[in-house]
Length: 293
Image 1 (cartoon, one colour):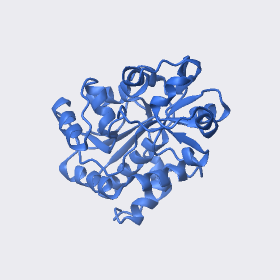
Image 2: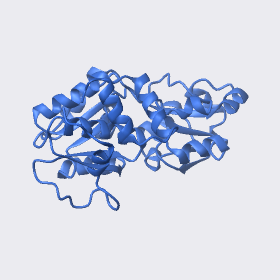
Image 3: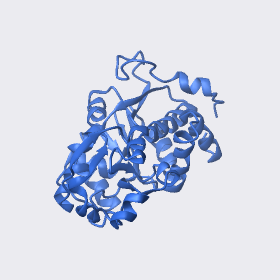
Image 4: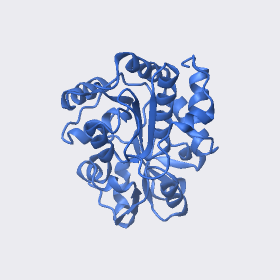
């Protein structure tokens, strides 16, 4: 196994500026990308570090943007490996498909992907969208489920990532399934500090966070249950370009997925998001602990 240092891990990043700018990597280099939120960056660091330790040339393009941008980057070859969430990916590919189990979601995604893309084995680790409110709001309005928001939605500002306004697993699904129409929508970030601070300060009355967002517990927020399963299953699942990611590399990624569970992912997120530890450090230490590097 390669002795990896923190400096070597951060050095494989794409640097400042446009994360999808032209790469100097040769055709044998595996480019690992991530969405613009910390958990996805953490997962991408796990993938990159483990692949590099296994002898592959790796480059990272982190904090690229939303799925809409990332999928295009996968299609044009700018990115070869991406940490995905199987249910959200299916909703992106076919908003009408309401498969609700890991197996049916995986099968549906496999049918819809281009020939040169493949989802690997889903991890037990799952990270769903969730609608969160403060404990004060929940107590004052008797909120336990998303459906309970009906009594206050018309006077409530809803917060989330900009793309949540148009996604089924966002305002579209909340209106279609639960009949919720909010006073207004405030575009913030993807379950990040802008959204968390806006919710805590009362600038928004409800917001989309992720079920593994450590601030839900740390800030005493209430994650409302989703009885109609709008947010579906959301297993962490690597998405790869089969033309540039060989079977041996895919096996490395599958080993990471098998070793990760939801509780662990939440704990690792807390180290990055609350303790402010560098994601590469957290990823490397966990991989070492699990014997994956």
